[in-house]
Amino acid sequence: MSLFVQKFGGTSVASISHIENVARRIIATREAGHDVVVVVSAMGHETDRLVDLSNEIGTLTPPMFREMDVLLSTGEQVSIALVAMMLTKMGCPARSFTGGQVRITTDSSHTKARIEHIDESNLRGDIEAGIVPVVAGFQGVDAAGNITTLGRGGSDTTAVALAAVLKADECQIYTDVEGVFTTDPRVVADARCLTSITFEEMLELASLGSKVLHTRAVEFASKYRVPLRVLSSFRDAPGTLITNEEDSAVEQPIISGIAFTRDEAKLTVRGVKDVPGIASKIVGPISDSNIEVDMIVQNVAADKSTDFTFTVQRSDYDQAMSILKKVAQDIDARDVTGDNKIAKLSIVGVGMRSHAGVASKMFRILSEESINIQMISTSEIKISVVIDEKYLELAARALHSAFDLAPETVKA
Ligand code: ADP
Ligand code: ASP
Ligand code: MG
Image 1 (tube, helix red, strand yellow):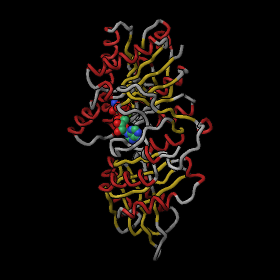
Image 2 (cartoon, protein in one colour; image 1 turned 45 degrees about the horizontal axis):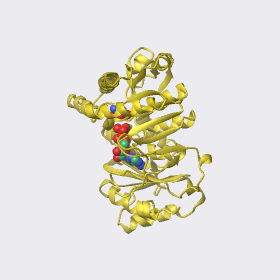
Image 3 (tube, helix red, strand yellow; image 1 turned 180 degrees about the vertical axis):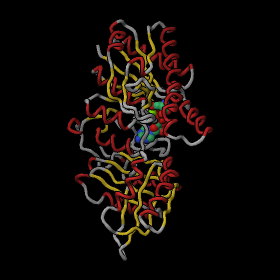
């Protein structure tokens, strides 16, 4: 007998008939002799709907972040109740748990909280009594009892964290595609479903925009050695297993996947003096406002002054711009410019470590499509470029085919 944590995403619980399908899967696993702990997301696009409602009130300020979490957590609360009711109706004893009822304790960073502790006793009790616990993903409580959420896509992290504390045999992330693909199958039609991918690559893909898994879920699974699988709620197929590199039997391809995100904006402070301390004076106030700075480029100074460019999430663009305008005055820079219609596209693969020429090939393919590269950043296993958002799909398709990622071109 094994213990599985099965997480079902928004599309998988989008309606009562979808919930019935989910319940059938859970019951089939139980009938095969296994224990199951279920984690669910909000139904369909419910979280987006709740975000839109709050946007009608206006731009969120920090005192509203607490209320945002109270609002967002309602989506998952609806799903757990309906899934538990459906299971019960179908003859499978089940009980719903909010994050607070499990006692998933997080820090107090509203809208992007981190799990600090999980009390497994309630869940263990139910598992031993033959009851299926149905846990709300994406939410917890802080030490003072405030409801918190883990950031968009965070139900994956709830599932992996529960699998880690319960020492589950596998954490299964059921979603609306068959597994992890070479790139987003909704953008590149001939993207291929991978049978396995290393944690290291999956971490890069997730953090660079492949939303099929929440980045922190991958981090957690790697740290606590949780066997993690992504698979379809709608089709019976083995899906994708996330593995350790050393366990991989086959030689790794040079590029395993392509990730991209439109959630990007860039800001440039022009005419900055080339003196020590300038980078900290520019980036410091941005970070102090809890805005994450991603890629940074500082040019070599000509005439003792230079330009300083960095990227932030698109939703932080307006705030970052107003902070920078003030900073620019303080440090006597010429002006601040920005662009919030950019996208970041990245190629990822552990095989890059032992192969030269990957970057030059990527740049050549993009130039053949007349796509201008605005910024570049590299690490051992990834190369990212910032390009105009309108060329994103063209770039993804061109790179996917040039790096032989499509099914018919993959060599055994
Ligand atoms: P869920 O609601 O089940 O959590 P998400 O929408 O968060 O589902 O994630 C699944 C989606 O991730 C897919 O529908 C797909 O469009 C997108 N996606 C992006 N990159 C990839 C990839 N490399 N492999 C699979 N899916 C991807
Ligand atoms: N419902 C939340 C979201 O849409 C969490 C999740 O689905 O993982 O982001
Ligand atoms: Mg998701």
